[in-house]
Image (cartoon, rainbow, N blue to C red):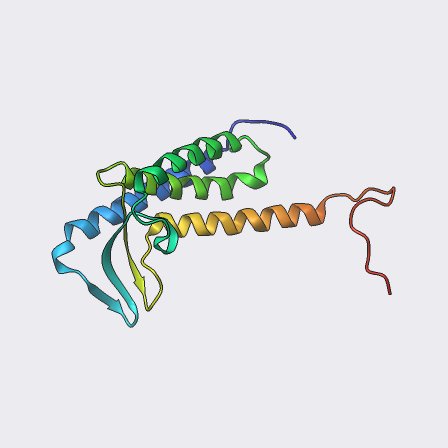
Length: 162
């Protein structure tokens, strides 16, 4: 495995996610007095300050979560030197993680969540990026494992016996 500089496109994607996330939160906060707002059907804009993580787990642990997120961000930045197929999932994860960390460092340790779809817990652009990045990482790892050359000495995957 060769270490290298992260591709510029990966850095730009991470930056674009942070900007989109922070801009969307700023817009929602600017129009807070008009919320909740129904966009269409079950899609609403509802402001929620989440001091926990996904699905409001660990509520009230915002600053502890911020510390963990900072460590995760450092690891993600270090991992950006991995081979190219991992760059985009890592960049997407990084952008989402930085977006939510910025929120946590702005006061009470909470994250601004505002996208409401029917009964699903409220979320934001950073949350969506983290989920998409994680899914892409799993797919990348699985695809690379499936396409990796198999050892001829009987190691690796074996076909099922009939």
